[in-house]
Length: 319
Image (cartoon, rainbow, N blue to C red; front, side, top):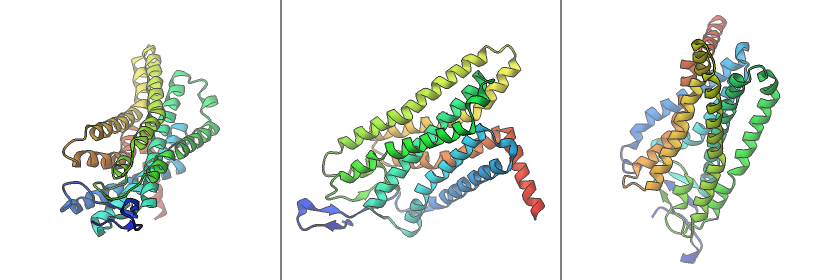
C-alpha cells in the first residue's frame, strides 16, 4: 500500500498523506483530459479578468449589479484555482500525494468559495428585487455602503461557518487506507477513509448546507416570486419584457448552480455502482460555473458587451 504511517502500534497507525487517484475507472487515460481542462481553466481566468477590467475601466458599469458581478468573478477565480492546478498536477506529473493539512485546507476553501458564490447570487437577487419592485428607493437602499457590508457579511459568514467541516474531518482517525478515488479532497470522500464514526461530519455538512445555501435559495426564490408578481402588474408588454430581461442572465446561472448541487448530492447519496459519475459531476460542478458565469453575462448583457468593445478599442489605441 502507498500509505505512509506513523507510530509503532498498528492500532495507533495514522496516515501522514492521502493519495488522490484521479477519476475512477479511467486512470490509464485520464491524462488526455488535461488539455481541455487546462484550456477551460485558462478561459475561466481570462474571461473573469476581462470582466473585472471592463467594470473597472467603464464608468457606465459602476452599478451595483455589475459590482456584484465583479465580486462573483473574484470568487469564481478563487474556486477554480483551488481545484484545477492540483488536478493538472495529478494528470501531468502524477503528483497524487497530498498532505493531510493541504487536503483539509482544500476542503475548507471549496466549501468557503461555494458558499460565497451562493451568497453573491442572493445579493444579486436582492438587487434586482429592489430595482424592479422599489425603483424610486433603489438609490437609497443599494448604495456603495450596502455592497461593502453585504460582501463582508458573505465573506465572514462563509469563512467562519464552514470551519467545522475541515476541523471535524481532521479529528477523524485515518488508520489504514489513504487512497481517495477522486481528483480533489471532498469532505465525504476523505472521511469515508476514517476508521472511526464519520456521521458527525456528514450531519455537519448537511446542516451547514441547509442553513447556508438552502436559506440563500429560499430567499432567492422569494425575491423572484415578488419580482414576478410586480412585473405581471405592469400594463405594458414592453415594460414586462425589459424587466424580465434584466433578470434572465442571473436566473440562468442560479438554475445551473443549484441544479448542479442537487444532482451532485443525489448521486453521492445514491451510491451508484459507477463511481466515475459522482466524481466527474463533482469536478465539473466546481469548474464549469466559474467559466459559464462570464459567458452568460457577456452574451445576454448589452452594457457589458459594449464595455468589452471599449476595453478592446482602448487596448488597440495604446498599441
